[in-house]
Structures are given as structure tokens and as C-alpha cells.
Length: 216
Ligand code: BEZ
Image 1 (cartoon, protein in one colour):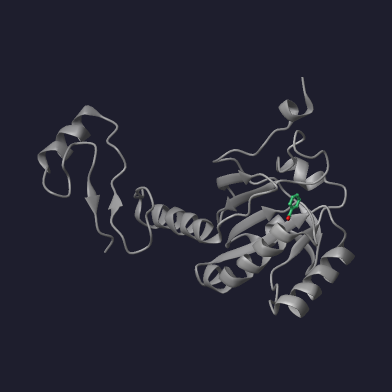
Image 2 (tube, rainbow, N blue to C red):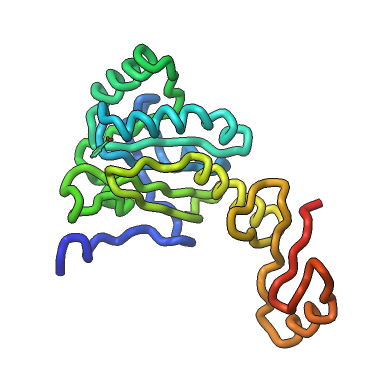
């Protein structure tokens, strides 16, 4: 079995793996985020260009995310002193304050536990992995990008908003959905439910499996 095959990546619906980590905001534990949503993201290395562009982008949406009850937490295997120096550099050279914590996972243990390391790409530096963890500390979504491709923070915000809409209203969200747009009824699971939906057929419900509605 190769090393990558033996890594157990947390899956959607799993409890988020526990952690206690040294961060630029002091020691933080998973438990400290209970009651908030959390976007936990890894980046390969401090003082690298794509990672810098991502941190700046995350800083730009941090307040909006926070208003929706969601915190940000970054991770790399760089030391706390490297993180501190990089955060200072981003403020000095780019005028951007990084006001969310960065984990110094110097042993790589947390990156491995969360399946953030892609051994075929790098044995030590984590890839660009994002976990969306809900307010009950379950994994709700994850995505992985290679080292050379920066992520889209608008998509991450859209994903959090869609998951929150699902929880608040028991609905599903269509492709490219954004807050304020119509949502979908989850598909019927029984013949009887399908018959009921078929009877409600109309412009917003063209067939038994596709019914759209506005969120009130
Ligand atoms: C970057 O952030 O620019 C980067 C980091 C590791 C590999 C490739 C690019």
C-alpha cells in the first residue's frame, strides 16, 4: 500500500478531527470554534506568491464570513516565527492585515490527520485543502487544489452560504446558487412523494423531481 492510499481523509458527514494547535493567536482547539462555522484551509508555505495572494483574498472576505457566523483558520507546516514574519510582511508590503489565526503545524501531524498532504505532490508541504466545518463540528464540504493554483474565496463563501441555507430551510441549492436566488426541494424519496410533487406541477415545478421556490 502506498503512503497516499493509507491516509484517511475526513469525509463529508464525519466529525471534524480534534486538534489543539499553536497559532498566531495562541493555542487554539477545535472546541474553541463550537457554535461557529469554520473554514479551515491549508497552504503549502509562507513567503510564496500564490499563498500570499490567497491570504490577502481570505483577509478581504473575513468580515463578511464572520457576519455569517463563520471563522477562518489557516495552516501550514511553517514555524510560528515564520507566520509572524509573513503576516507582518503582508501588512507592510501589501497593506493587508491578516486578522485570522494561522496554525504552525511544524510536525505536519494535523495536516496528515486532515488529509491535507498529497505525497505525490510534496511529502512535507500540504496542498491547498479547504474544510468547511459546521457549528456542530461536522465536516460539511472539502476541496483540494494543487500548489500552483490559487483558490477562489468567493466560491468558498458561496459554499458556506449554501450549506447554511440548507440547514436553515431544509432545501438544496442549484448550480451556481447565490444568496437571494431560488432554491430546490430535495428530490422525493418515495413513489407517494413523487405523485404529490407531480400534482403540484407548474412553472416552478416542471416535473416531479424538479421544484424550485423562493426563500421567504
Ligand atoms: C506559491 O504559493 O506560490 C507556491 C507554493 C508552493 C508551490 C508552488 C507555488
